Image: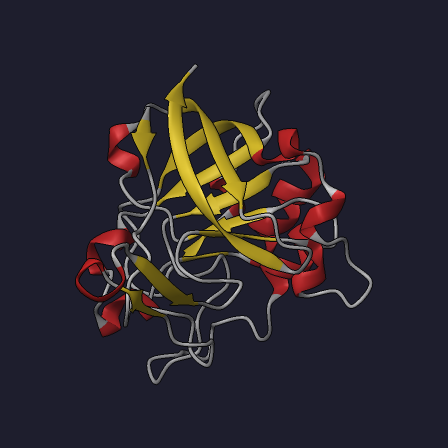
Length: 210
């Protein structure tokens, strides 16, 4: 089994405008005889899953899914040839017997830098193709949509078209994976969220050979 998860730690990268992350001592061995940490995170911290309620006011929340919904027969698509803010075209979306498309951009190597925000993204047509085939989408980037930065170009789609296409079709989204070079092109992705009743939650993402 391969860990595909970024660790949750103070000051870790977050989506622009999301809550910052803090993991601080609450009790210590020296003063209390045991150790407890206080953890403050947003629901979309680090490696996490988006529920439809993230972008749709009437969308499903995580607690409406069985645990089995977060275990995917995944197909990894190599997108490492793409550069900053390049769209992943619909031609990259395979028509195979799977239930999750994993976009392997290699952008996790920029984790913790400003360049991480200028990641490749799923073109709207590609997102619609995934939704049509019933694929969840997982990516080693901040979002399947372009993240708004000072480097945004005129060709970037506005808003969150990939999120709306996918979540609007009840296709879950997993973001901020890492270490996708450790798995094969076909593998089982486990992305089990914290038991939150809401729009999303951090996950421990694990890849397992099929």
